[in-house]
Length: 97
Image (spheres, rainbow, N blue to C red):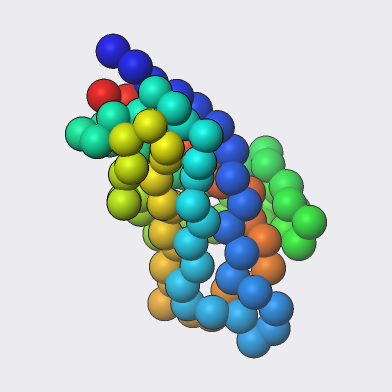
């Protein structure tokens, strides 16, 4: 069973921000077309624009989903919020067959 983990940065842009953002994860040469991926916030992570405290509360405002898996390449992480969000956020991911 193949699997992988990693980090990515999702960017909602400068003020006034956006309700949606995405990032394409590449370099996952072992990922298969039927693999499942999941993205999440780690409460101790920081980014250029947000503190660890911001990351701890991010799941209250931002929903992360994964899709568009491309075998031997990677997948896309999508972020959506009912409120406009701004700046870069650090996200982590796992995937498995």
